[in-house]
Structures are given as structure tokens and as C-alpha cells.
Image 1: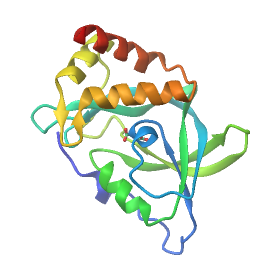
Image 2: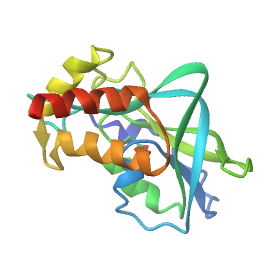
Image 3: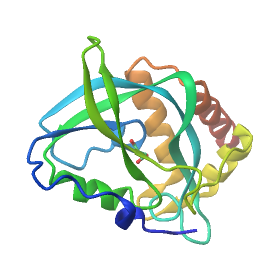
Length: 187
Ligand code: SIN
């Protein structure tokens, strides 16, 4: 179901004029349509990346949603991504972009030199109406292969994410398995 989660996000403290770290693990890695002050390789603990969130507004339509990634809690897991230091004004743009079910969560970011910082991450939890949940990876690939939305074909999201993860030297077996299935379907 298409929803707009922006109003559910807690407002930022109004005295906060300080730049904020935002962790990206999906399209925020490969589609950077916002200004930032610094970009660093980072990871967060106890979350795994999964193509379990419906996309009714970017990579699908309300009638035929695509699939995009969200994070699922898993004790001991590590999710690799990229952190951006942004000025607080940028959050309005990100809230709009991530409005189909994602909420900002505050968490600890770990940079590649082991330095840490508090930051925000956009997560679509399983209680949001656009959540699709688990499915066999081949079935996820089929859904991605046939989906398209205002931001373009769902396959481009998958292939760009897989390429960006390879550039980070990150092996994400879930993403790479879906990519393999998609390429086999297209062969
Ligand atoms: C993110 O990239 O961090 C959030 C999910 C997405 O927009 O793909």
C-alpha cells in the first residue's frame, strides 16, 4: 500500500543546526541527489539488508509495486554502506525521497578506521503498510524484472546497488543472488 511516512518522523531538535551523519545502504549509496559535507565508508551493527520493502513511488506503481531494500534486525550482523555528513536542511529532501514507509532511526555508525559517530538511518520496519516481507530470491528477481516506476526500472536499482557494493568490496549474498537470478531471466 502507498503511504507517506513523513509525518511519522520525529522532528529534529529545533536547536540543531549542526551537521548530521546519515547512513545509506541502498539507493543512498548510488544515487546521491543531495549536497553533503563529507562522505565516508561506514557500517552499522545488528542489521541486514533485504529486498523486502515495496516501492510504489520510485521503482514500481501503487498497483504494481517493485522491491527495494530495507534493514531487518539481526543480532551480530553488520551492514556495510556509506555515511554522508549533511546539514539538517537536507533531511527534508531525504524524508520526501524515503517517504514510502521509511522512518529515521538514530544509531551508531562505525567508520573504516573504527572511529564511531551517532547518525541517522532510514529504515522501513515490518509494520509499515508498504512492507512486502520475505520471498524466495528468485521470486524477488522476477518481481524486480517486471517492475518500473517514476524513478526508472526496478532492475536498474538492483544492478546499481550490486555494482556499488562491489566497488565497496562488500559481498552481500542476498543482493548478489537476486542479481544472478535477474541476469539469468534476462539472458
Ligand atoms: C538507503 O539507501 O539508505 C535507504 C533505502 C533506499 O533508499 O534504497
